[in-house]
Length: 245
Image (cartoon, rainbow, N blue to C red; front, side, top):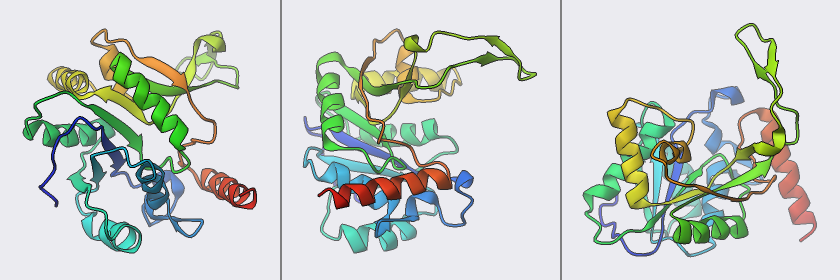
């Protein structure tokens, strides 16, 4: 564990990588599955490292995941990278993020800064999306990427019967990275912990405090790898990108 982290005005990146991805149906955690010659997580980190924007990179891993990360990610792909800080994850994604925030808070930062939280399982994120969300968070305090829904949405009951059909133009599918001022994010997580509330993403915790969250246009290619089919889509996408230069 690297303990030499320094909080600067530059943003801090937080990658969630503690889940096993059981829906992939593989024994190997999904972030370590091969994708175009290297593990999924290595692609994700490369996308952010190419910007040279972040002062520190916190990677939340499974409690027993340090050896796997070092052998499969750090040593073969990023042997000279000194901004990685490994944080032990919790039972839920929200608890994993909170563990990382507690680590940052313990460093007693003297000024506010932006924290960008990204799913390790979104390896196709591009630099323009990262920058657009980050810049919006700098001015607004909280920003997330979103894409329009393409399918009709149905509200159903416990018997799987339709209750209503809300207008899909009023809804968006939210992606990551999600970027927030640390002070706002810390306050939102503290409130959630006090009230024993677990949300589906970090922006939901800020919403509960009445903090406005700006949505910026996301990218349909920035999909989250959840099933084997998603992995095949990612492979095809990367193959097409290489072919087109």
